[in-house]
Length: 325
Length: 239
Image (cartoon, rainbow over the protein chains, first blue to last red):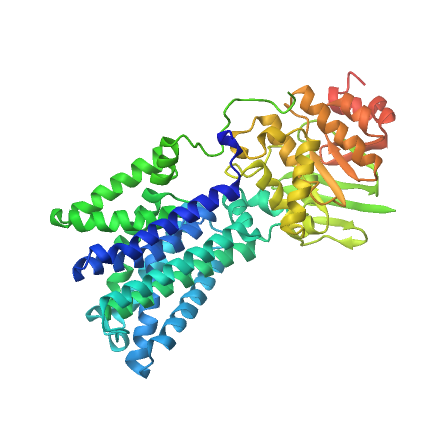
């Protein structure tokens, strides 16, 4: 079979199974890694993997380069945190509420930025991100500001959190796989490639862009709420732009617009950043540099690089030929 | 039966009247040519008819229904499908997926869309590039692909903006043959082209525009010998 004969569904299926393979590796990892600190590192990586996958829906599949993924994580964490602080709500109430609130704010933001493209979209979502963070940081009477908010835990053992995060990540990955195989996947990629062409073929642009924003925000909100219960603490720092920077570098290094990229990228980048911790602020410099390199030379990140090394060049002709032959 | 009625439609860009009281109508099953010198308003008219531009005054109705205020996606669902002079496709999606987008968006199930897309790919001799990303296709293949996406669901009217421009003669023949067969089956077309031999061969009737106005609307033979048309193309002296 020639390389150019690989259909979209085969590509997607490969990406899906490889990403499940990575998650299977994470599932058996606690056999070897029993150190609570490193389990914690992997749990936080899973939080980032969810945010990265959510951002990938927007940036990788719909072409909407939002700079607010970390913000929706922060919103999710604060929703469940505030509900328990003021009303004693437990996690089974707080987490769905976080998904709904983050999704609704995503929907509104999606409608506001509907007609914006490229740098204008990035700048508007960036302002939104900073405004949300400053509002939470300065509403001291409500949120306790920069002191942060304590969030009740769910489990006693760290391993329970570990497998809860993993289960959510697997479900999310299965959901995304079926979403991308469905007509929705076609429409989102069509909008990413050429919005005018998509409209001329009958794709409901407004509906699908709003859908992508809402879904992405809801998943980020879920990730933030789960993280809040694990860390038992949320603060405005969750919404820092540097967090968004880490999420973007995870997706770009792993592979933008692929199912594997955000998952693989999140673990690689976060674990690497633990090792680079001794170098202080330089870790971000390293990742920023990698993002530039990958963005310029390897559009599909490490995943694309891996495929190229294995000789699978996606969507390129083996021999240039005309249809008339 | 009248399919599309264009009634005294005007559209200005600043001081430039791109469409100036343009009027004509297209009957169901007709294959009509639209010619005119560069800047005469042909593409503007297609943009208006497909909902990509709003017109300033006049009226356009499709099957006795005004299209005013309808977006491109709504018009596509009503059966107005078009190609673009500067070809528009989805470069990072395979040729097959390019067609599936149109099929699914226009209401086919994924199974039906897949079957029709494969048939179209065969009809247009694109079989060898079915899984290739559109961004890797040649200009001519891309034109064929964009052309094909208009026919995933038989449109009420297909508006083709320069489909033959800069296309290899053999690909052009594939496209012309496809248009001829579909027209014989009753498909309605409006064909914009500078390629007079093709217009003469395919279109029984032709509308000629100049400076936003319709200056001739009759049988193709008559249009091409019309003094006003020759003047528009070559200047007063030639006429």
